[in-house]
Length: 424
Image (cartoon, rainbow, N blue to C red; front, top):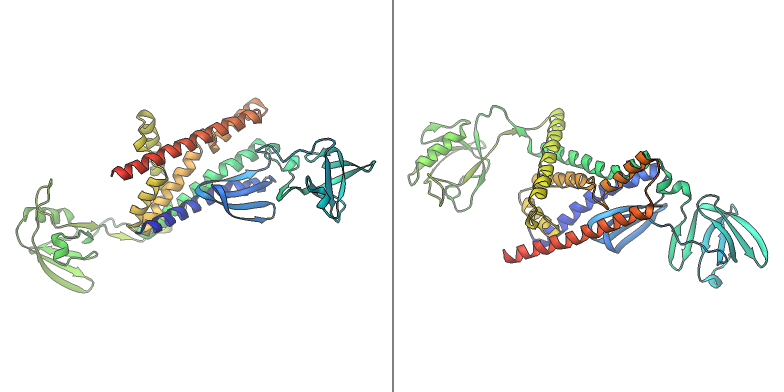
């Protein structure tokens, strides 16, 4: 597979994983009545953007990550100082629909005045002094603050993240990882439908892969051939018997009978030795007989894959903590590399790999590391125990530092991956 294809495939895969994750945050935030200002896939410079309803949907340059920016998580929009000159435009309901902060002389069909009092969170009112006449205007809950080309919707208190119950906020946060778990379950199920499940009592040995340049390929053996007999001895489902006969016949001519579709073939081949291995080898691996999985088997099999993979992920975390080694951490470069290798094996294996990554993304995000969902849930837990929230500025600083450290770690890991590739 060409490098360009690998890159595009990996980017597409992460696009799906991140979109599903952020959609979980977005959907449950909207259900709680929280204003979601931006739904972003990626970080860095903006590549594409469009607005639908209240949310700006953006695609950014760096595809590894994303966010659903909710009102109230960050300091809210620019405040209007007492005595500041602004302009407002009223809607058909006589409520303020636009608030202009600059270029006031160029605005048409507006009311210009000195702001005496502004409340855009609770009472939703602006009191203006217009040429000595003081008037109080009601503000529409979806009014826009406009400065230059930037337009920002106001967020009344009841539309902000912090105004919701601990349960509603926790659900909006945990929904991202949960969506990754659901996606992983679906992908494992799809994989199981692709590859099937092993037949309990197989009656034959079928050839899987045939190694290039080995006796099996030279003799014309192909993937999917069923081995009927070797030197006159029936093989049936006894793969070990096939291995033993081949190993004992190093350098000797063997007669194989194969079933290929409706055709019976007789071939001769000579097993050869391989460095570091005993006995004769011909270069084949078996294809385990499988059958299509039923609905129940697919669901239970997918669930088992979830449990087994989760155990493997936490074992990896434990080993990493006990014996930290930068070479054990893979960044974007290694992810591209592994994805390319797996893609060569077929879509069924790529589906399984995507399931693993989705499950890993969900679990990793639930770790109590600053800037991750797990840390935000931990702060909500503290709030539930104390009966009052942690100082938002302190929590924000913790997440900022955590994000910076994670970003530095990503740079270090990527640098290490590049060095590893260069050094071979």
